[in-house]
Length: 436
Image (spheres, rainbow, N blue to C red):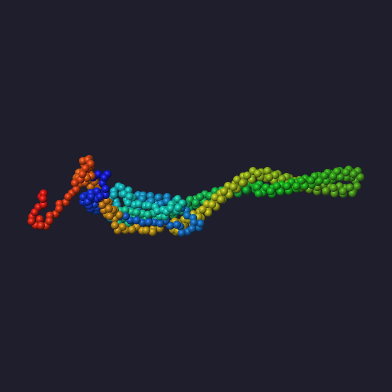
């Protein structure tokens, strides 16, 4: 009979002494039962490997990687590809026949059950600035046999390393192909702009902005030459008029007197008149040509602003196409270097630093853990049974039990008196003490 409100350490110790076997037996029996359960449960073996992410061997300024995808996202993609039905089919295909049959015994849920055996985890370190740097990833495979766990762990690890290399090479190749196509389009566009610019320059020869100053100088020169020609022809006309008047005077005098000297002078004047007429005609032809030249240069100067604007637009389009072509050409060169870097394995790579091990003992069930849990469970059961028995036990052992049971205070206590031993002589004579 117990009252937890009044019990002390000595009371609990007394209860433990009275009920010691109720603790010993469960603590001894439950680990045995747990070990028996552990022997019945199917065993599982775990094999582990670890892959370290290595930085590129060639520094970034000399060969920039074409793979821009985040490493964490790439690892997620690799994990999903490896654990997909296609990826798991490649792993299962490499297994020995007996282990393959063991895996295929799962039936319709083959890939789902096989995927549960594989655990891929990412390892990272904190740089101190809140950013976690990925250092590698681990592969853990739990299977029914040690050989199967090791084989699957090896194949999954190798598959992820191989797929990563293929993904990086394919990414670099895809970038290279894309840039090559873009470069071809840019070259075609550049050729078209160049042809348009050349055609415009051919159609507007002499009207281009860089020829405007020359046109102004030529117009000024032609205008001055034209003015000089006009003055010359005006002078020739005056000379012709004066010669005609002189001829008319000499002709009138010759008709009256008929002097021989006047006829010679008349012939000379007529010759001069013919020469002046020829010179006048030649000068008029020169003036016509100068006027045409003047009109041509005037039209060029007048058309220069519109031509300059059109030329500026065409030249700007050509320069834009040229810059785009040069930029794509530079990027394609970098892409070729990056592709060669990935193909040669000099870029970022996965290095296996811990190969899949062959487990020597099962990871489940862990007999030591089962025994410890059984012992703890036995202790709990024993304590629970002792508590139940003590609560139901109404045996009176102490004055506190009397008060608890009768709900009355204790007035007096009769001490236990031990019986005194007889003297040796009375014992020898067979005498009994008084009151016996």
